[in-house]
Length: 317
Image (cartoon, rainbow, N blue to C red; front, side):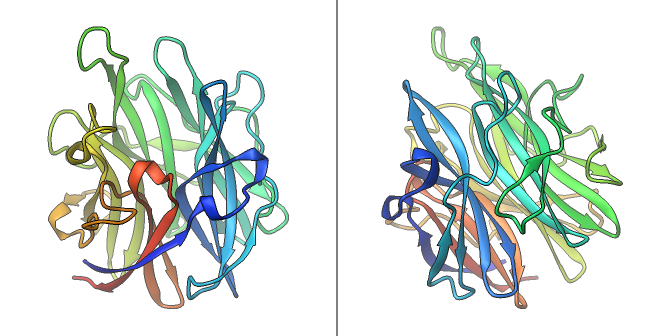
């Protein structure tokens, strides 16, 4: 794979965001319309030293030069008291299906012994993606016997009439040393569905881990000719906030049957820049096609604090 970076296309510091949010534009997720591209993302608002994550969107032209519209309020409110998405939604994956827009919510809720928990819910839009309503207060995919923690980051596509969801689950919370706050380790899994609501988990880690405490997050998949390509972000479980060598980079894998995946990070064709907004970190990828071209949205330093950029796929095998 060979990518050409087109630069940063959205910086939240330059615009007034809805819901009192002032920082971050995390996990950009594209939906292509006839005359523009809508990009959903999560911004953050600090309350009492804690963050809440709210979904926002921009509409941008297909040259990625002009922002045409910015959401005036969040398209979906945070969950009800005690719900899986009470304290934030990140990411927010939207797909077109049979003339409708469906969304998969990665909801965050705070806990006491560890910082957070996650699950995946579903929503639909009746107004072209300006607002969404949940199908219910509960999740459609959550922790289970062998996927015990942190089910989230759902990315959904429909192939040959079957819904496929790539997602993550946590397999442990660990403290790097006695007295430190525990950090999470999570890996990528896969589930299928006939209706997009009731899911059957494949029940295994589908992407090889390069080392035991590698974290894999936010998978995104696209089909080019007869091959499926997956990008995801990867990091160390510990010290990833302060050490750029342990921070997020993009991982890559490919499959010819949606079952067996070959990991090949060395063929990803994209990495951090020597300097600028994505010099220390590159994370939260989103693949999409538009007018015969393939693009990759992504965040940079500090987990998307400075916005998101885009790259165009130039060559592939």
